[in-house]
Image (tube, rainbow, N blue to C red; front, side, top):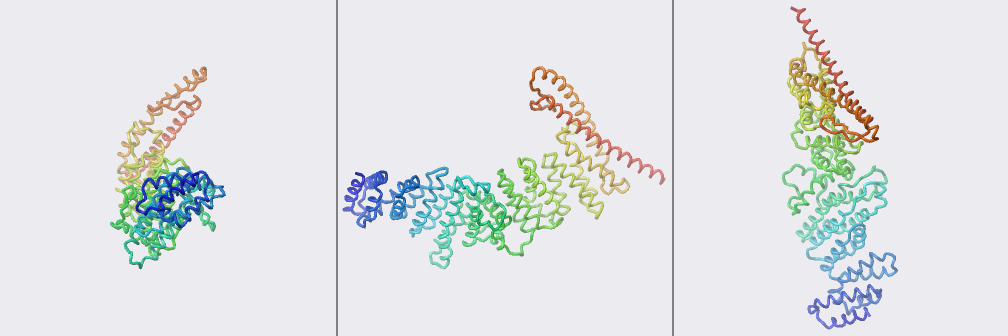
Length: 597
């Protein structure tokens, strides 16, 4: 019945001129054709489409059947008639312009795992349709690539080797297929460089450049790459990255050219009309590209050997900053790796302090501090700490001094401040033992010590929260008292001793007395409460420093409170030793002065 109905519609249309086809005819043709497919009359429908007499009708109306045919291919994967569906699809690719829009609509429809299925199914027909277009081909390529990328960006990026192998959502398969889809258009740009259609060729090149940048952002920004080996060709995402970088070179934007263009006010692609959101993504794309080249070594052999390590670090610092601003562990870990790659090329103490005038040279170590203090993954925290130390080691003396001041003012973390103070102590030690360094002796050092030897809120400072910083400060002060004689006063400590006592030592004494009294009272209250709790078999809470300790068994609360008291005792013992050393040194100097007189 459906076949007869379709033949009736076709016979009526055969006597009409092409321009006389009505909208009603298109609708009736689609309905009848759909019924033929639904009822399984595929071979009869194929005969009608192949009939030369129906060529004009199929050319104008056939594209309406592409959707139903594609859905059959998608749902009937084991159907023995699939070969007829594919043949029919080839025959329906007759009105390229309308068919292009129809295929892109079909690509935009699905969600979830169906996204990759429909893309893999339609990439070949889509490529065929575009290659049949002669006018506005660049626009069509751009529209297709943009639509495909938008759908692929909805798929989750696999983050483990197992997930890459299983490829549940088909992203890896799509990336491979997308490269094959794009290659003919890249080759067209290469082959048409001497062609008279220069304007169209440039437009096609621009669309391909946009696609490459988008691909560097997604999926390659978050993609994980595993240890390089001879079997690296088995990693589909790495292969995709390599092909994308190859496309950039082929269309006239090789990575070395991008590096040499770095820092110029006008970039070589600034003429492109990126949408606002796309323009924002460029920073992510460039960071991803830098990581792929320098860390993964893709196309690294293209880099000229004349580039100095400090120039390459300067180039990459902005990209490292982009990575560290992200919250995804798979992304900011790449920033840490890229920083390591750049720093290992540089000799210790050779990175000039002038580089710190570039914003990213200060924001990157601040980004490392955030990873060190906020990242839930211990290995990443430890690596970020190691990279911060490596960064410090590479700076010259003035650079170290400047960075220390910056981090002491911005880190707001006791552990980080303790780490910086330990580094200050190390630099002072080098200066006293080897060569005099004006940045870690005398007036410059005193200015730095003003940020170290003080309590932020005087005697009311939370000593428990700041215990790491306070212990590091006391150890630094003890070191200075031991190593620097009052007579020599190389560090300037003895000139500033009165100020240090007033701003640091005396408030610390007062604070310790207040804190110990407070915690001893809380221990007493907790012990009294625990007796009542034992009767009720319940949990209790204790308020310390104005904040309530979370509900926990009384034994655990007592352990926490005793631990705090132990910390205060430790601070107090070091403080007492420092004051004892100061007294010994000043007494000794006084006696020497009396002896001289």
